[in-house]
Length: 159
Length: 159
DNA sequence: ATTAAAGTGTATTAAATTAGTCCTATTTGA
DNA sequence: TCAAATAGGACTAATTTAATACACTTTAAT
Image 1: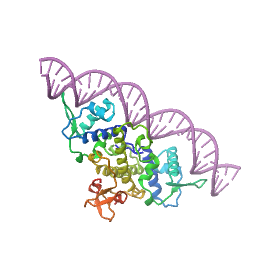
Image 2: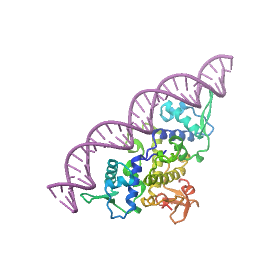
Image 3: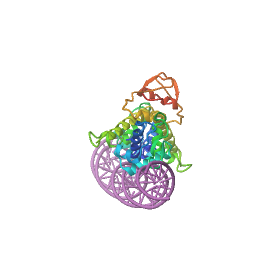
Image 4: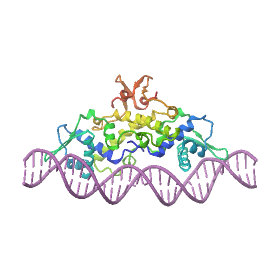
């Protein structure tokens, strides 16, 4: 399993819930907790994180709440997931300066991770929040010219 | 971070190490542990798992060892990762029959996960083991017609 | 046939990460 | 001024993962 963590799942649910409503509407943590059947403390925590990442805007006070900072078409899954799980580098080797890489095989790990991270990030950047708000089949993607390419072969081979 | 787990990293290192040598050459767990600077028990465990997933072949006895079950061009990262981390569904909801989905919002999670899993699997199926054996830049992918499409735009939008 | 090298399977323990909760301060509209 | 709502941080419990150890089986060279 490539796990995204429960909290990341919850965050995606919250974001799509907000995205389903008019952009101007404000959502309190309490309302979202009820609508999404999630515990309130967890929802609060997630909304805070999403706010700090610039994906939500907040309005304090009695009639306050949260709404999207941008249009659902302009928010990618990569952004939401990064907000919760940190940057796309995997494990310590990617972030360290010159840390643990003693020999060449360790650097092989580093290269692998770089490649995989790039592939995954690219894939997740292609899916927008607006794609989650309606039930939908992911049967293919469009290339630059707008031609529909079936999923399996669209992936193609790397250069 | 989208974490793959250290063991999965190790498995990728082991597989690329084997892939770098001639296909007929046999590799003992001990040799691989030394070459990759990994503890022997861990290497044994990983080789067993990779064998059971059909990615490696084993030869017992005094001059035994492991080699690839298939050509490096025919083994995708998705296969190696799945071998270590299980199928691509994320968390429990994907595998359960009718388990915890009480209401619609839970099913929203389910839909999200299905979409994301599909995107990630597609991306990882496009990278082959042979792509890890040499340092290489991932600048683009080829579409069905063999046209090179830059990474960012190749991802395109979903249908 | 013997023996040593090598793979196979299971169980256990320790460590790291994640999930979830609580408390207090700050802001703002009625 | 009160009540509702966000903001920020700290803390605990639970889960998952990593790593190791041990006993067993198979094979092939001598």
